[in-house]
Length: 398
Image (cartoon, rainbow, N blue to C red):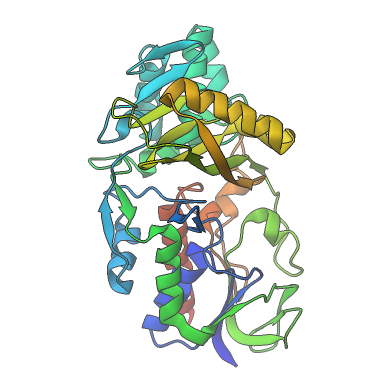
């Protein structure tokens, strides 16, 4: 019997297993898919590696940076950043206007997030859209806030997201060095692979968990495609929508997940010297940045991403090509698109301090990890912190 079994080989499950292994525990990891990383993935397309999942690392992400150092995953300075946080300026294309820096309600919202995030107790009744409406924000200002937050913190429309939940997330990642200044040199997927390499044959791919149940002296995990796995304790480190398909763990609401699309845009010629380094848009290319001489990386969430997912590929590609031409003066040759129909868990008013506050609570010999169980439910740092916390619970329990 193993000391611990981890369900899910995303960043959270891998970090949990990495920490347990460092403590001398006999640990095994079950992963339903054929690769590690979960919502972190760095595939190769058009001869280049690109980020098809999580990628940004803040200087204040101490857990990620510590684990990266332990497994030899090099971090480098980012050539671009998110929104107006990055080391290079971006051009905004929102609501039919082009400008270099957001003003008005966007800045007032930042001040409110700072204030609300510092309050231990606060009412949780407003969505972000409710607050903007109360501020008398114009349609243009609302579009700017929607665009910026869809890129940095949410992939659902602001009319669904709790203002308090956004403020607490903002507080959890704030401080000097919260501007996505770093990237993994070999991609975030390479970081996940480094952790898995250190675990060796303890990571079992293609092994979904069908059930996790307590036994007299531990837990047993039923896994189609292989024998049941017995261990002293289990860590379930999968998103809530995946947890809902595993028998045994306590029921929990699935919550509201946004949609997101990550893409590599391959151009028919090198970018012009005067093309922007990056753009923020409310279009189907969302946040797009220079990836190479003739490639662009792109992330889009919320309403534009939902529109993309509803369209046949030829229509979606034509819309992307027009936006790339308008913003970069470049012609599109090919799109490599990775879609996430469930990306980030976003709390609505009342949920964070309700069922959301109980997501990390252990249940007997079953412990819970995953970014959703942290204060940063849509960041790699949150996933890593949750993995460390769950591993520490297992170690403390003996």
